[in-house]
Amino acid sequence: MPISGSFAAVAGSENGHGRRRRKRKHRAKPEPFSPPAGSGWAMTAVVAIAGYALWTMLGGGAKPPESSIQHLAPPPGVAAEVHNIAGSAAAREQYSGDRAYEDLKRQVQFGPRVPNTPGHKKCLDYLVKALRPLADSVQRQDFSQGVRGRPLAMTNVVARWKGSGGTRSAGKSVLLCGHWDTRPTADYDSNPANRAKPIPGANDGASEIAVLLELARVFKRVPPPVPVMVVFFDGEDYGPGIADMFLGANYFAAHLPADVPRRGVLLDMIGDRDLVIPREAYSMRTAPDVVADVYGAAHRLKLDPSFPAEDGQPIEDDHLALQRRGLKVIDLIDFSYGPGHSWWHTLDDTPDKCSPSSLKTVGDVMLEWIVALGS
Image (cartoon, rainbow, N blue to C red; front, side, top):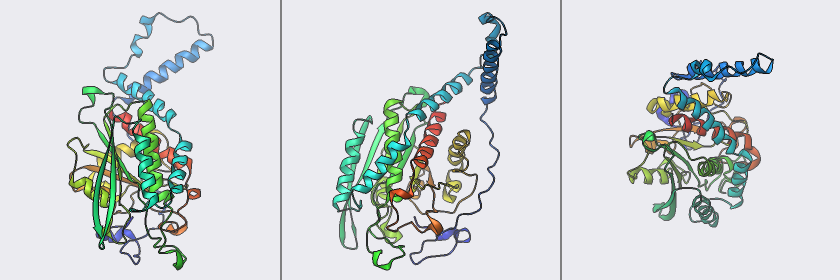
């Protein structure tokens, strides 16, 4: 993903395409996390109940009458929080990083997913076929755009889940998205002979789609407490310049459905086996509350090493088209892929550079965040 020149002071050195690469910064110590209001009651209840169970196991006597432990009941509003903690765990148990990794490899096996190529068509057919039995509805958003005199046939795929929260979830719907196409040119390959070849796109393309597909399976088994819309964007990485990128996101933003959620997360390049996702700068500027909620979810799961309380650089990506339409969509991206970012937009972007563990980490954070929204 290219980096905006408007944040040049933090972006590092330029390359030949107007993008800026970054070196991984020293990982900052995570900021203290403040639990949401009411969580102290939930923790007190859990600790007290656990203490009583241990006391009983150690021979503390017969179980007291029910009336004697009524004071352990949480106050109004906290019962839902305790229930949602359990709901998050149940959802995360259903999520398999190994299964997501198989999806990643399957996409790469289709070949390059560049518009107007056989691999692109195979992947599109696979996505639609996989999603139809999982989602409440699946729609194709077909469109065409000319790039340098060549018409490109592209498709965004939109899947929806109504959610189980009913009227309680009104106004809490979420948007999840990522791009499924791949770069037609390996611009930064160390071998000049490779630079006109398409990239495999294991991390840059397949990883985010693998996570979204596995989330779709979980939503089928454990319905989300809030409505969820998942959009698979096409044409994100065509390029080579900014003018011919983010094609699917731009089209979606110009034709927003009436029910599009107002908050959301874009996933991009999240399969890196050395996963570190700092807080992307445009996301912090436009949707700091969504950033705080998502990184708070990661903190609760003790995943701070992958989601550090560290400010990252600004990234030009699909989320900006949505932000321009007033949607609070943040970008989760690990833009430090390989030694010196050397695997990005090269033929080295292969499945062995990614890991099931990273796909599991990101999926778990998404589920924890979504379940918390249903509180």
